[in-house]
Image 1 (tube, rainbow, N blue to C red):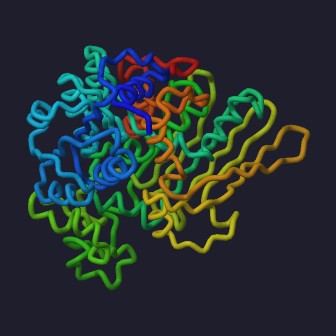
Image 2 (spheres, one colour; image 1 turned 90 degrees about the horizontal axis):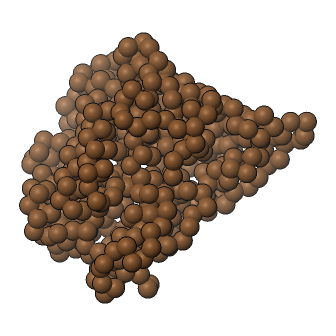
Image 3 (cartoon, helix red, strand yellow; image 1 turned 180 degrees about the horizontal axis):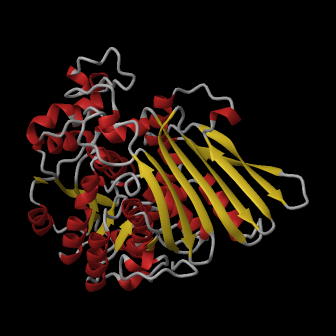
Length: 465
């Protein structure tokens, strides 16, 4: 692999700005490895942004520091990732002592802004796991910090890189259905994956911003990218009707719950050694319980959500998110002046499926590279013509093949122009969370929310790349 630290840092700027910079923009030597540090060693930090980078790119990068407030998880992270770098409980101390080129932020969503801003101020490029942040004030603070800094921020939007989603982008870009006018987008989380958010800190609005932000940021980013315009106005409904205080009973956690024999949502964490090693065995340090009761009274996010989003180019979107579906999948339909595109993933009534829902989620998150290949349909139906079915080859693992393609773009092909503009920087991260923030505010106020009133970013008719 003939790559260097300099070329990688070029890729960081390219991903942030949407275009490659000349190789001599950075004055680093060819022989030096990129120095990387992680803040937050939960599952996303140690696996996707940790072990996978160690396994695939150790010849061009090295981890110089890991930081977390839980010493047990830090010890586990070193073993799981296979690294021997120093560990820290103080972020600024880590950056000062190890001088990383790139800081990867994988903490709780509500803390992203703190470490993004500190990283930029201390002279590091920063890569943040989605979502960018959880409210408009933190978002504005990040915007201001990057503007003052000479460093860049990128956001890890892996869904753009799935071959299936890229095919939809290609068809829309090539005007397969003429001028795009409206979109129907519906996402279904099953009672395994969807319920898991309510067990975790994600069920508390001031920690994850609600699923409007934590989960739907993926979906809104896809919409922004597909539509190629910025959101202008949002009106939404939402409520909590199944989880939280609505449950028929509640317990301390699944492991010790007296209701485990009659609870349909019972999850035995002791059967998953990785989850025990990462979370249960270390909860004594910070009190974070991974198999918490999803009927506890403190849950205050929504479990059903629906929104209308008007874009600056006048496209109208109807969006919904269901968190207790019997199956996990999604469906999107694009309407245009010359026809309609219909696409879906994992809708069981439209394909023969024998995989259990828990296994489906495990396959999606799998980073082993042992891909399960498939060919998924896209329906193109032009006006006055018979419909056509287009088969798109894709993988199941790593979020539909998106994870590895995002990494490969950064590490293997930093100078190659991407015809689909899948690079995601600060503006992309902000526009996706601002839709969710606006939806949350709309539910609370009963009024439509203007995106331009939330931060200094102004919606554009054509998305800025």
